[in-house]
Every structure is written in structure tokens, then in C-alpha cells.
Image 1: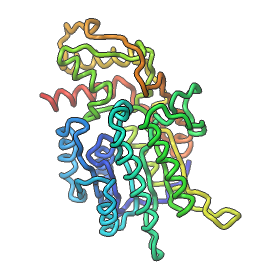
Image 2 (image 1 turned 60 degrees about the vertical axis):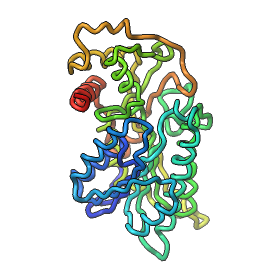
Image 3 (image 1 turned 90 degrees about the vertical axis):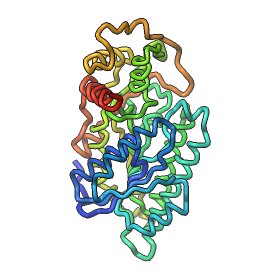
Image 4 (image 1 turned 30 degrees about the vertical axis):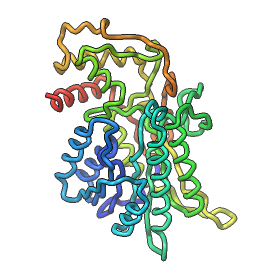
Length: 355
């Protein structure tokens, strides 16, 4: 196991995407368990139901050490003023336009947030070292399992080539890793990218399958199961994702100089997944059972009448499967929440939120 080199006590942490699913849960964990000040940024756009984002923010605003800015990371002047105002010890970039399918119809949103916004953060991290200042000690950012594209080799390893994205979303996430590597090399910025695998849980994203299926089934609509049910996903529960981030952020890659006197990039990338892909049909069966148990659906619900098996859609991949050995080796952690436990927590939250 690696030894932590960052003590979170009294640190000032920037979390972008603070109203998002992963970002908000990360903020809550940091504010609950560590003596940190969290500066949250989010544009609170209407990509999905804003009420869920507001619900997450309401939870965070209960904490005295949470300061929130409603703004966009693609706004260069705003990001610069934020770094001028606060001396950030750690920067966690969870802000991004998410979703594979949406990137086909709304490509501009992905370039704006995932490329320009990401660049703005890197530039400010770079200049945080000006005039001999300690600056940002660790830049941690969200990548995605989508970078693996249609790789045939499973499980997906961070050693695999990922040069063939099948969606613009995946291409922007790969570009984040490349940009971070370049800035780590040029300016000695310790950076760690995290490739997340199908994150789910309470107060999650409505555009994700488990949430969308629930909405449709509750409204007596038919759900479409792509690739005729032959897709497999490495579903990862939100608490496991957050645990991985919290551990990783406390160990910045070491700064070292090469034989040429220039920095060896202090740069790492990890998968965070459950290391156990689930067949989509089995996943939907467990979801149905938990929705009935939570009384979202009646016991007599005719599930077969509301299910349609259809072909794969553009940008999707048949399987995601994480090789998590490096994460386990370096941090002694491997996601382990089983699907039924996670979906039960989601179903119980769904009942409470929608009454």
C-alpha cells in the first residue's frame, strides 16, 4: 500500500460539480468526516431534473464549512477569480457534461464543460505555484469507463490502449487524461484521473438506466433493454466511488526529476468499479423486486408486459468490466457493495423523494 502524503486537516478543497451525483456525495463525506473547508462550484443546469440537484445542495448547505458558487467552470474569469480568492490545497474536478447519448445530439455542451472547463482548471493549478507558492498539492479528476470504447479485452485495465472512443463523451474524457498528463509533465502538477464504472445509488442521475427504468415502470410505460439484454455493466455503488476518491486524494503522485533534470510526470490513472459485471436482464429483475419491496410498484405488477428487447444504440458498448487490482494494491480498497443492497437503497430513497 502507498503511504498518504496529504493530511486533509484544515485543507481548502475545491469540488466542481458539487450539485452533481458524485460531487455532492463527496462533499458530504469530506464535510462530515474531515476538518476541511469545501468550496463547491456547479452551474446547476437543466440536463436533468434540477429538483434533485437542489435536494443535494440543500443537504450540503447545512454544513458551515461549505461555500457554494453557482457558476460554470468554462467561465475563465470566474475560475481565475476563485483561485485568486482561495488558496486551494486540493482540486477535485467532478464537473462534466455527462452521458453518451446526449453527446450525439448536443456536442457543444461537452466541448464547453469537458474540454474548455478542464483546461481552465489546469491553467489555474499551474499558476497556483507562481512566486514560489505551495499551490495545489493534488488535482483529482473524473474520467470514465467510456474511454475503453469497444475494447474486446476484459477486464479493462489502465494499461490498455484507449485510442478508439465510440462517442464524443468518451473522447472528451480521454482528452482530459491527455491534458492532465501534459500539464503534469510541464508544470509538475500531481494529478490523478479516476475512471468510474456505471455509478448508481440514491439521488442519482435520472438519465441512468436504473433511474429511467423506475420512472417508466411507475408510469406504466415500456422500458427498452438494449442489445436484446446482452449488455453487461460493472455497476458501482456511490459510497464505494466516494471511498475510492477520498483515499486517492490523500496520496498525490510523487514529484521526481528525470535524468534530464525535467519532471517525471506525477500522474496516475485508476479504475473504480465493482470488478463484477452484471447482465442487464438480471439487473432489471433485481431492480423490479426492490421496487415492489419498497412499494414503488404493486406486487401484481406485470413486468413482462412492460419490457422490450431492442438492438444496441450508437455510442454504447456491450460490456464494462473494471480491473481494480492497482487500486486495491495501492490503497487497500476494492468496491464491494452488491447490486441488491445498492438498488434497495435507491428504491427506498425514490419513495421518500417522490412520496
